[in-house]
Length: 305
Image (cartoon, rainbow, N blue to C red; front, side):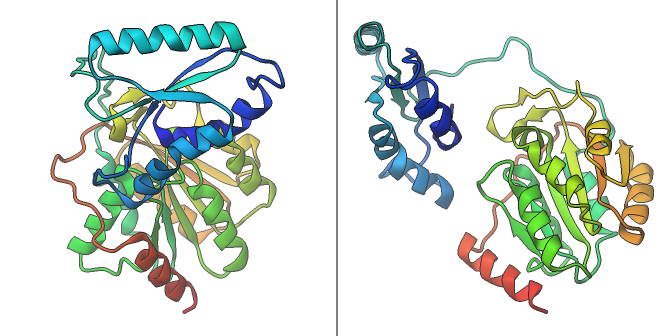
């Protein structure tokens, strides 16, 4: 896992595998994004500083995985001995470039007509001047930011989740419950939506009529290597309908997205639009120039209008 995943794993690590509960040996490989002294994005810098303290606080013995074979073999032997003797987890913290390049034997892809960026561009045509947007972590937020900057539209109406994967829809719901006269647009990803699918049940259960929940489904965790999700094997529209969403749409083309957005922005929801898109991210996609704190301040000012 990446060390941001360590935060999600704290509960089961303490209440399931911990020596004082079920006492289950488990080897953890934790990628060290934001390693102190290395340049990274703000959310990863915080996570990097807290990786060792989190493991210490959780009572998990750990070490940094050596980047040479002999050292790694010796460290692994010690880790296995610890797990056997103590019936408890052991964690290796893995620095960047510890492992060599790996070419995936089976590379996931699909042949949907639109890229995620092209889909977002179409969606933006139907978002009102005072409609707030909450976008998920990864490429989606970066593409949204660039599209708005290039069109010289305001970027103040968008809250860009640089971290907190899976929580964009919950943030959108909170805003929607307070700003009932405005449509609240959530740009979600398939991996993020699956990670915290319970938020979909909350949106439907609260009957948040002004939420437009858009799942950009390319079937992969594209920004961290392209590992496939189960996004193309399940139906987000059927899940949303079962959770109480008033209208749902499965789309692949610009025309289908346009039809869905016209309906969602003119009638009551909650609404879900699943956009099946391809993996085709530009290599030169940039990052927001403003810091997360500036983005938050501008977004709060926008909401106060």
